[in-house]
Image (cartoon, helix red, strand yellow):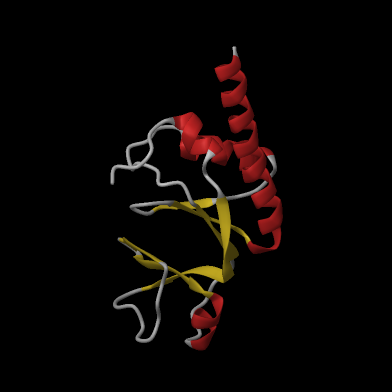
Length: 141
């Protein structure tokens, strides 16, 4: 279960898929409010960051100022793989897209501006396609 480490295979095989819904980043001090099911929690000195569906945050009046789309890279990347985050972050940055990244055990998860999710998917798929072409071209020479 170690995951892929080869950068060319990681990029060409990342298969970005959007998850349904709108996700927001918010923070709480103390315990996570009952009834919430965050997809990400990060404990920081200042409080606990929650990434959760916008409807959940609205239901308990948690403040937020950023609505994101959640994209999962379907390749099983090794946690010690080098370069994948840098590659997709550079491609997204070159397109003027912000990206917040969370590494899960099996996959990388990207949170991008909700209204630009299809643009982000096009950039990521284009990056994967170029990496696959480069690998084919290298194999043929």
